[in-house]
Image (cartoon, protein in one colour):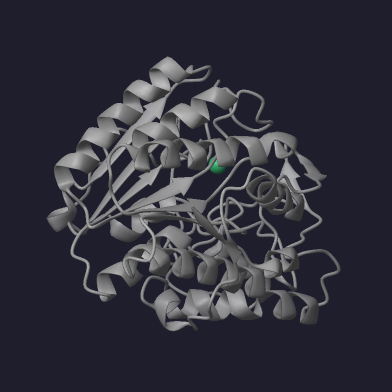
Length: 346
Ligand SMILES: [Zn+2]
């Protein structure tokens, strides 16, 4: 299996994250991608190639123009406002406020576009986010052109929390959604997105909630107990034409592989019945038993096993990297999924 990777992920090197009432060194750090790349190379998964540049059009096919402009200029506006630290949102429209106007001051504007406060925006963030979506699109094209039956986009920063006009949860552009929309624009009719990250893919759900051409399935920590807290319940199944094309599988703290895998099997049956032209897997490995910010109990071997299960569907498949914060073991867990897939795809 080929891996698409860009050195430009290193431009996303934030120093601050709000966690447990403290400013800490971000869990989502450059070393994550380096460890994964090292495992891909050391274990001989396949060739590693650089992405092509797809420009902004595929981004604007998914995200709001004002949001995109905000991401591109936020760090500069923040510095121009005289703030010494990294750009962090501290105030946004809450349940009782609404948002009739987008604030002009960057301190208000960042709140308007933020879905949470933990994620800072830094000088290199925008360029890294652009490179990450190029990685996703290049990996997708490897499969769309028929050159490969499966490919791995080593995306960083991740994307699945980014909504039409919101960033947060370490995500800025929704790589999986951009890839899905791109595949549709290239003549594919049905795309399935399977999100196996520990956290609910609220951004992806938001983007496709009213659509019947993209099936979205997510197995994740119950939002009553886990970020992003306000989306990802089982009763959210889509709206209008999209009714029945979203399915969430929230699981409780301490969930073992037996429970997780039963949910995955249900999701895989939904994928099979949908018969998509392309399967996109939002691959987060923060389901690992020693992940520092999550609460599932998957082991190294479980990642291999579920890769086999996904591969046995026999679908054209693109894996796009999302979360995973047990950094020393992120390489083995990620490549175990990909080797599991290869084990069945022959
Ligand atoms: Zn996650």
